[in-house]
Length: 488
Ligand code: SAH
Ligand code: SF4
Ligand code: F3S
Image 1 (cartoon, protein in one colour):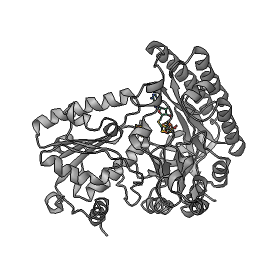
Image 2: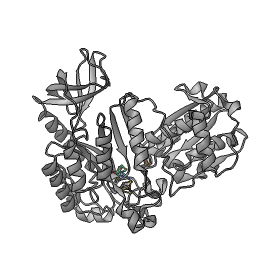
Image 3: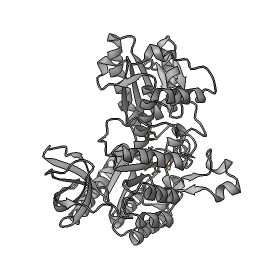
Image 4: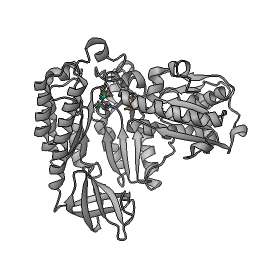
């Protein structure tokens, strides 16, 4: 089956036999899409699904807005500033549309799901609004927009995982790729908009995950990141929602995250495996032991803590305490001593006191994170926190606390990197370094970026690199030869 037949079939199925409304001959080979993505890795992975669906309809991608027939922005709604950035871009795209009135502008992803028809009605900046579970409908929606009508599909699904769609890899390095393993989230952290924009949690069929990873390997890729909002809650027993559909027999034969990791690591032994995001309440020792057993599973865990104070964690509805979190950190250190650890932190959540903030600082100091993503709390409409708690930490206090958190993390990152000076690390080469074509850049198993002189090495090589110096963000080294590679 070629790509276009495959897409046609997919669309046919999604519309349950309804005739395919887009005339492929009309669009074939001449339509250009400009696709821009914001937000998390899952959004970037989704854009590759969108590109696959539209490529099957005869579209090609372009990086030049002026030659585009359609512009899609895949959006994020996690914080207010993420949405403001998208609004600014939409205004810019509308300037382009003034010169080219046939241009179709579409909003995809989480902001589309959050604002729904409001984006069409109030702002008049867009022609198409499509939520994260409705991408199979895109060809029909484009046609509707081209006929002069506003087009919208923001229906969230309990089954959609796009499991059968082969993503078109966009703008990557040809070495590392994202593979979605779950969609949606059932957790309802009180600050978070994701359950409203992405819907219920669903796990993808493991066979399709392994096939995709295998295909990536034969296409020359050497690393995959398995993606989900909470990978540890991955559980596949025939599809659908986790808690509602599975019978006892199904649950007995279900595949959990540790088992999925084990299968990917053994069935595609030449590829390096990462995953994100781990959730402290669900991360099991079984996962840690699986990581420890396989050399091709990277020794790196992103374990968002959000706050170091147990009362605030409860208010955030995170499902763990400070002590539980520190116990998970001890388990990582015990089972995988060389593991890299990073986190997410929110400064100034509702009612956060100076003492509670100080507990976040002391937890960071205790864990000694290698890296962190740090944010000021941004109230999101409809969330539990918006409905129940006042966003009462003044903006300047949020800013000051965030600065303290960032300053500490900068010191911790530098300390962590300094410990690597003098060591030899196995590095997967990703491409030329940002600053010089004479240097290559890659990552250690702990996810640290390392730069070294190119010599005869090339992207995709596994190279042993001796670290001689570092900055807070990067290790600097010299290659000592090809690495022996993975031996499971
Ligand atoms: N599923 C992941 C997180 C996804 S969102 C997890 O549970 O860890 C990525 C990060 O954005 C979160 O970890 C949190 O630190 C931050 N974030 C989410 N909502 C936010 C909000 N309303 N304000 C500020 N930061 C927020
Ligand atoms: Fe949001 Fe919590 Fe789900 Fe992460 S686990 S996506 S923070 S609700
Ligand atoms: Fe943003 Fe949606 Fe991801 S809100 S962080 S793009 S799941």
